Amino acid sequence: MFISNAYAASTPAGSDLMSFLPLIVIFVLFYFMIIRPQMKTAKEQRNMIAALQKGDEVVTSGGIVGKITKVTDAFVTVEIAANTEITVQKQSVQSALPKGTIKSL
Image (cartoon, helix red, strand yellow):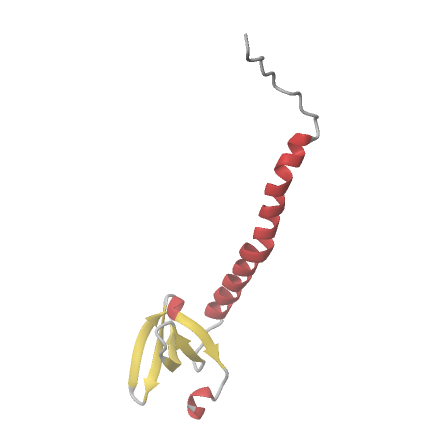
């Protein structure tokens, strides 16, 4: 025959670990650059929502600025103008503003 047989070469024992090393490094980088900061931000958001109380000035995810007048388990009532109140879900509160922000607007 003109074609010789090809046999599989034996691999050293350490090469299995070396083949997975780039995958492990990518996962570690992915964790520290994406997953961990996102978990930290989500925890801060949960703590801010849990700490909402009457009189806080907030911005909703829709961009509405107002002062909280009533807080329940799942909803907050926000006064957006004199004698104008809306009820929104707590999760729609995007951020809490420092006191006196509404007066400066």
